[in-house]
Length: 287
Image (cartoon, rainbow, N blue to C red; front, side):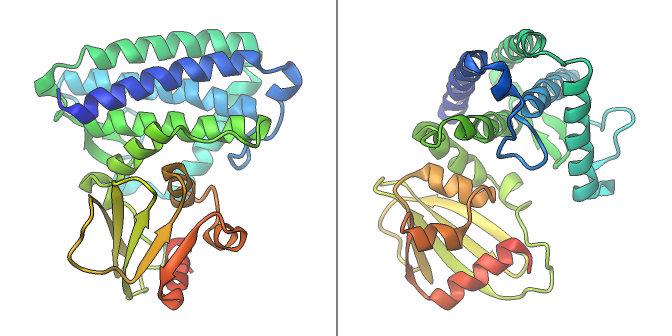
């Protein structure tokens, strides 16, 4: 088992424990509060996490049996429209929180069981099985990358919930760094593209914190490639964005915060071509 898999497994275990503990602390009135996730109350996000745990467990077990085809009734990824998929997921979470998972106690009991089950399943994967193909709405990906997407789901949805309760809540830095590293994997980065395929510009952007680990984004036409590097890189980027934390970049790259707002507030700073940076911002938004 490689180092990053061990780190991701540890990250999932700690985030799972924190999720359940902090959800249990919520008052009934807080359960109904709108989350940072569009259209969902906190209870809906919790219901969604139950649903995705079921999906992950099913996909993993099928992968280990050599079956990575779409689940019966679900279209293959190349037949899906992102907006239709998103709307369906949103509606399903609300339906669950209004029916099967109607109470906080019931939701937490089931979520606790699901988290325990899936965490146990991850640890049953043999070292030579992490490359096994697995079904995901993104497409066929490896079990290792499936593991990474579970960590991302945990971290982002915990932020969606707990940043409403505590405005100082942030994604832990060790988890944020792992997410950045996961995004450098080709199977992920090649799926990050603008909604406007006619945009043809190219730009190189470095993402830096005070850490010795840095990341670079290369935009070429409609696609983006992310890579990790340590100083010093031989070629200079068009733009360098400085942020105090990796979690800042995670929120920016998942559209949970806005680059214009972060620059205006001074939370992040940029060096280089402002024109190219604004072009990238429009590229990212697909306009």
